[in-house]
Length: 326
Image (cartoon, rainbow, N blue to C red; front, side, top):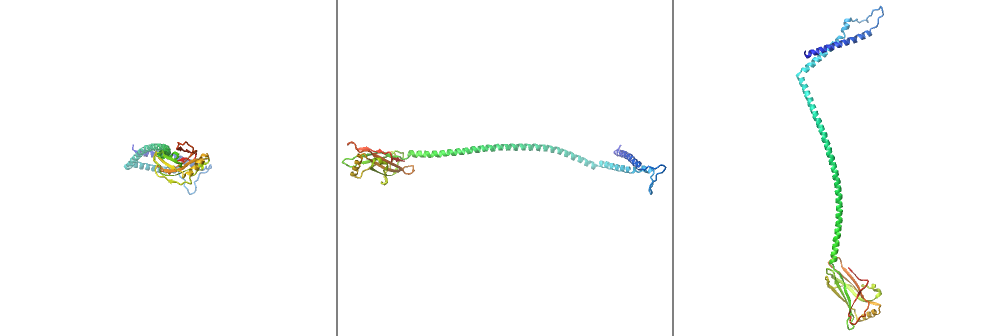
């Protein structure tokens, strides 16, 4: 049996089912809508209207049903013809292939989305690891910076110590190699025939370099022994002294009283015990350190002039004050 026959049978069945249902619906309102005639009076139709016979009333609901069946049959035949059309079949196949391809692409897109999620998660993990290691690197850099600052501070401290050590080494070197001039010996030499004595002063350089550009002043006096600190050099001018005192060398200088009368007056005052003989002076010089001129101040005294006849030289003693040297 062909497909068209199956469709016709289905349409006929649907028509009969619709006709039966429509007949039952048409009878119920007809009975309910008819008025009940009084006994002995026949029913009459309104004026101008003809009363339909029972055959006509039964055929009225069948027309729409038949029209619906015809429409359904035409639709089914058109659908069948359309389904049997090769172009339509090809379009359906193409649609099916397109749907299958879309389903395949949807599957691959799902896998791609899963892979994208995985790669995104991996990227987030790598970024987190990068930030973590960056944070650690920053912390280590801060520690290294602190260590570098401490090292710089230590280097500065060491540099200051080195500079101070160098200065001290230079100072020690200058101290060890500079000239040191001092009074090594001072004595009075008595002369025969009543001549006034003279004072001999030896200046010795005990340093490791020579003393040069010597300038000095010195003198002698008989002075009250209780006022030795009042002795002054202001009345004596400074004069250049020729010569250079080499390392270990000695320079001798003499002081001679101006006259015999002056010396006899000095001798009388000293013998009374109220005065002493004083030799005093100042010496300046330069050395290789170039730190300016060095100064030597000296003050020596002789408490008495009494001596044995055979003693021609008597040493003088340093005073408690007035002796100073650079």
